[in-house]
Length: 284
Ligand code: UTP
Image 1 (cartoon, rainbow, N blue to C red):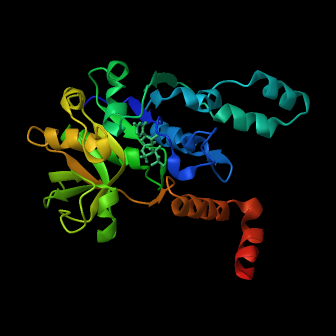
Image 2: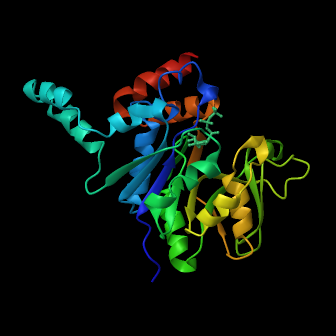
């Protein structure tokens, strides 16, 4: 029996420049999809997959993330005194029972690989999830749970992938896989003409701890950043890494189109505003 995956790492130290000026004072991961910040969706998905240790790779400018998961005593007492029990319950639900929060500072955003390496001491010698909160995935199964199921069979790393239009490959890590979905190759941001396929890596990984030694040796790659993709490529000769074509819909909330469509789709799921919103869309 493979050891269960207890730890989820959330790299949240990036600058979020595509959302300026919104992200000048607010972390990108705190941007709401309707009424819940991206980071809350991320935590819920990880907890549903069995994670109890939540590790945030953060930056000093991102204190709002930590505050979101702390108790706001003043607000709670106001809600209690005014009998707003449902809202009080909503506040309590932001922190799932039985989880522990860890915050590790990434002094400078040197890339996703560097952010993951910052988690080394807290993760220890265990498999762990990496969850990028700006990739919002809506699925009944839960993307991290799907990765976990595969890991229980293989005991090796698993990464989530989805097909993208060929011309978009230069924005992603791209994989080549065999008939068993085992990775043959992975490259960061390939030119569409040279991409080995159109299967793009999205923001969910289940990694074994041997990735850390490789990350320590990884040099700056595409965009001058320490790329997680490059370390995964180094892991390939020693490990059968599986690509998982997860179910559900992914919204890339790191860009405006994905963010707006996520808001629209999730707003249409909310009963109190659905009818009015549909009416408004008809008018458009
Ligand atoms: P992105 O490149 O999508 O995020 O990184 P960004 O750099 O914040 O956004 P833009 O491009 O400037 O708009 C994917 C994820 O990895 C984290 C980011 O916070 C985001 O969640 N990240 C990236 C780090 O934690 N550290 C880094 O050095 C780089």
